[in-house]
Length: 372
View 1 (cartoon, one colour):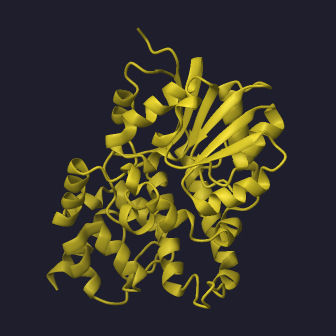
View 2 (view 1 turned 60 degrees about the vertical axis):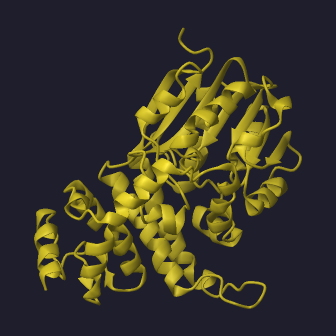
């Protein structure tokens, strides 16, 4: 088969052998995988894995090798270009679409995230740079690093755009004496956050960041957004920065933790995992802050995300015996075997992408006033 022989040649360039004996060698279970990848590229590769057409013992290593060898450029199906073109012409992250990612992803079930994320309930990269040796310590170290970088002091008011399950807000209020307003579009996250943040000076706004009331303008000393910008989209980066700029007092600062990429949607991740998600490029963000903020701090720590993702995968696998018997209200299975393959594929290809340095994660601090 021509497509199979072509796959063998391409994989050999990355030091990978089709049906080989190394843990990173993919094992083909159904030969239709070659046609699916040829026609659909990344979308075909991911879907065929979820469908059981191929397996790989060390999927993260396979993706690292494939991306390091730039193998994705070997197959350029029209579907990849069609998605990019569609995102150029349509605002995939408009206000009326803002709740899609919450309904599809964040509202899957707090039981899943509690088991995968652990005590911190932080769904973002940990921070191992300071010497943390486990996931929980790395996540709280990240929270602390964010607070220190923002120079939080007792009495300050903080706006958190994309507050997750409320655990950063609770950490900042408890350890730095600040009050926090968290913004979310997830009903499940909101319910959890309100529960864990009880007794602290923390309140929540349920809605899209673009619909924050005018009464918030000029009232916050600091703003923070930890891995929410990936749901914002290139057509809205400027609006996102304008919201933070309006909310901040003069001399205020806005810290964004962002997964950095090319600025174009990934065909599989943006359709199967995070609807309409896009990893921003530095160029896009620099253009978005022009005249609003000056960039006062940048730190990249992508290797920490690789480690974080591998730990999430470990905890997800360990929890699967419990998760696979979880039921919905109607008695149907909440997480089936197909979900298991999809979720592991998601976690491990992301780990491989960070390991190959094709994507990164950054702390960016934008400060008022902008450079004149």
